[in-house]
Image 1: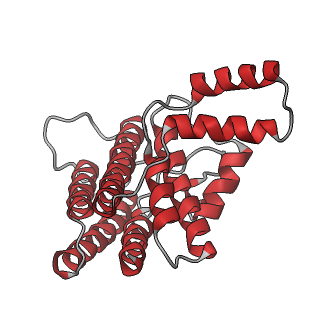
Image 2: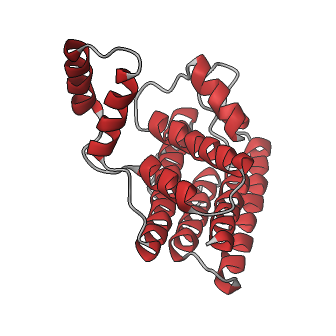
Length: 238
């Protein structure tokens, strides 16, 4: 990236627009019912992080390294890593709240292993094979619930949700997980399967021409309204 005045100016305008979207959604959450405090806090945090990036581009933060493409790429990665991780955590907190208030039973580790073994028995009832697969399952099934468990528990127990809504919700949060996981590793190239899942989830813009992640800021115009709509639909049917 060449930091010409024109490019910096374009980025500043772009970030101003995105910050405006964050503020708009923040203000909506401040007055709507139900409200989602964790999502609201993360909206504010994202706007602050965007403002820091904008100030960096415009040279308004003293004592930082000079503007160059490598520094900007690192800032981009860190920004998105924080934002995607925190929005997933904030959503998980809301899901756990729903589960607790409605006394839903979370699919625990032993239940998952039992389901794997039961399904295997319909294919191959050999004790040797079953013991082998059960050991693999015990070694690989997480010992504690993770985001997908909370999401599936809420989707399974909330009445009157359409199959389309359930499928789209799972796909959307799968896209968030892919981006968050990739940003936590040094290698951020995407597999063909991950590209297909990102497109399906609505995050097709996250795919760069080179096959990695495209560090855009307009993810968030999609991200937050979709999370809010998802939670609204859940509460509407509780």
